[in-house]
Amino acid sequence: MYGIRAMVVTVMLGIGIAGSSVPIAATAFAAPSSSISAGTFSTWAAAQKAAGFPLMKPTQTFGLLRDGQIIVLSCDSAGKHPKRYVNAVYGSLAKGLLGLGQNNSSRRCGRTRKATMLGRYQINGASATLVGFCGQRRQPSCRSRRIELSLTWRRRGISYQAVSYNEWRATIVGFARKLAVVR
Image 1: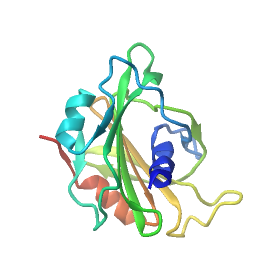
Image 2: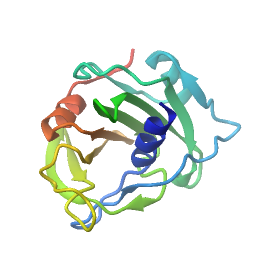
Image 3: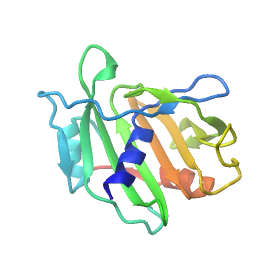
Image 4: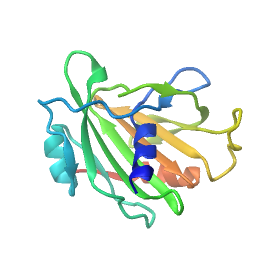
């Protein structure tokens, strides 16, 4: 279980777009700051309170159950003040996986790696970019279902990233479009 979460979280830590090759995160967590209420939480409301900014939560997970707790960490790459990063994973690598990451830094929370641009979508009024880790040297075809996908967008100073593995493009887009505000 930990291996699955580590893979998804390392993919989800960054959000950035540059040219035809789109950088996505490939790094470990930033160390939590003492002023941040970092930790793991069983409810979205508790994670939102710890994060200190409005969160979105999935309303449709396509039959996938959450794998573990919701994680809140610091994202110190924002510059002046420590910001928060929140992550949740649904499913498994074997059966299909969806993940949601969000941070209040309006930029990525880690290093990036190259990916292939696959399209642009509208997610709740914001323009989102879909990339895949495919179609490049030693990677599977971008037509394959068994690739990592990352859909990123920003809205009201919050960066969002939905990730998937072993899911179709329509699934990750549908997952992102069905997010709801945590109350």
